[in-house]
Length: 311
Length: 311
Image (cartoon, rainbow over all chains, first blue to last red; front, top):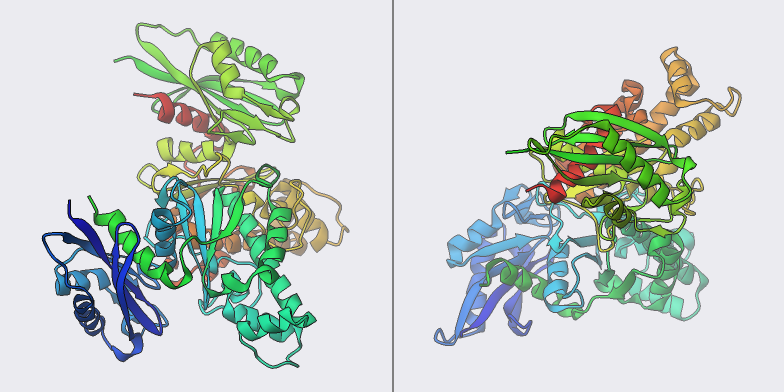
């Protein structure tokens, strides 16, 4: 039997990364281009596909390509389109990304948002292999979520469901990029942490990056510790509401901010347990993703392709 | 072909109602007993099954019974048990209600919580027949929700998912019966409305029932109008977060409080639309349930039996 490969593409606001992945989750060669250098999806895809072809010489007697999986912001699994992505110049309207990729490459292509891809990656290659109900929450520039219910990704009627980042944490709270007030993304994300630190320190210590705030916290700075404590409590409280809705077996955290360590995770776990419904207490684990941070997005995109196209 | 019937049972804190329903949703005879008169599930079920048998004489050459469907608070679909229901004396611990019913009646029995039953009823007999993604929210003594995703009821890993009533609306807010703070059930329910009216009127008009507050609102009382406006806004805002998570085609409202009319529904719809994500605006309808208020629970329980046991 031939070895199967998927092309994996992770479209981000700054970089678009790509590579080849086999069905066991091994990454064979990868590369990246600057997303902003391309004004149309066609130009970006032409370039990415050229570079993908250069990465590996497949021996067609031994290997076959099952298709392409793409993770991208505001991607719609049902339609294959990217919808009004504020951080992507080429997708200010609705762009049929998967169809264009298929036209250019001749390969089948599936697209989903990056957090859903991370959840599919966790299911195929990570810690959720035996789970039917779980969530992956990605903590980075934004807060994304991919949710499995009954063994299926939650896509909803329009292919865009699962947006925990834009559920309200604090009514009337901070203004979000989506136009609403108080979304949890504005509290639990890189920008959210920075804002909370500015508020807690009353601006006296300047606008710092999470890594700087973490270093301060590790050095005993009370404002920095309080900032992580609040951020962890926001996340723990909100995840307890998600637990009431979804009764997941586990919640996996991914993304840069998830690597902050106990300064974030310890207050988060306490707020989560304190706010769980009685029948959930002690039963739902929160863990770091089983996928290596640098590889999550590509493994997720590849898992999407394998779960869609592999026989 | 024989006509199919299901026995439907709705276990409530005050009354346990029951009846026979055919596959078209026609209710044939119904009755009720006082739940509090029975100290064990066995006693309650014996009595309910006796009364059910007295309601109709089935001609076995023309009719057959497909099974029993039960809606009950804190019911677990996966295990058939009722878990720690604060309002049911016979279920202070874990009671295997479905198994006991089968033992006593010889009929197959399925159980789920009342809001899930209402959602199944909406799918089988109501306005959601052609929908795969929708929610039913029951507004009464509590706030319950039954959620369909991808054509399936959301049960989660433990059979208890879909508890929107115990998701947090206001962090640190009103104390809920579940032990947590700020659950939406404490704001959008009969008790929630009463509390909000007490707050808005600063207690000067006494502790009134929703019907009295509604009469005041219809008479132009500003405190009463403000109470309904706040309640509608709480619900609309929270449902917009549910829309971000579930991308439903529609949300159906059921239960006594849902019958309050435009004094509640108009501010709710405005808050909902104002807080939807851009791609959802104008696309998700909120409507009253298509099931008659008095029959929702029994039709839901019957729909559970038909969807579980009917060939």
